[in-house]
Length: 218
Image (cartoon, rainbow, N blue to C red; front, side, top):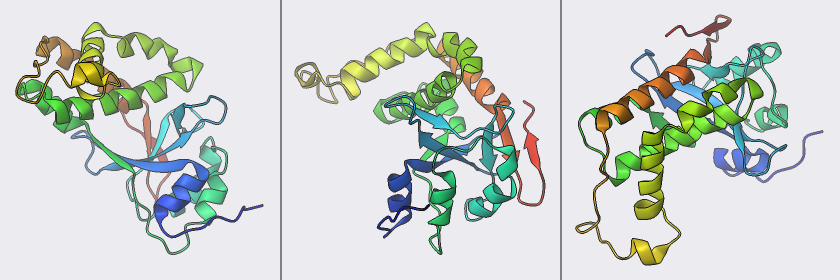
């Protein structure tokens, strides 16, 4: 039974069922990919990707036709709770993504030593997304060592202390002019990032409306 929800926007639909769409951009794909991302009801505060039955992240290339593509491939995916209710509420509302991750841009920022607040925040967002993938399945825990890479941990520490810290007394000691810059080996950080991106893209299956799910081979 579909529960009644007040719908004024696509965000209302997503918030009501705790299911969202994220956009993933990479130079390894001709088009942006769109993935379903949801709150894991089994673990409070944890989010997860919608996977296919082989354990790969299920992705589509056409945002507008995401409902049609999902329904065509419904027997190939591991359905999150309320997925069908979420889809049933679409009506004539055009789907929207809640967040965009451009891994090519993040890589270029690291390569170009252009690693300031905005680019660090983008980096952390992507790493958090990778963490969702790592912890949503026991089969993925082997990638935890990549998540805990010491150079990534250094970025987290800087981010927590100077960008998103709850310790405002420390944060307020520095304005943008005086705040120390992140001192890190950018080459090592780049290697760690590329490895994580490889893991993510090795575990993506792209579904085309006309065809069946196709795994991406890095």
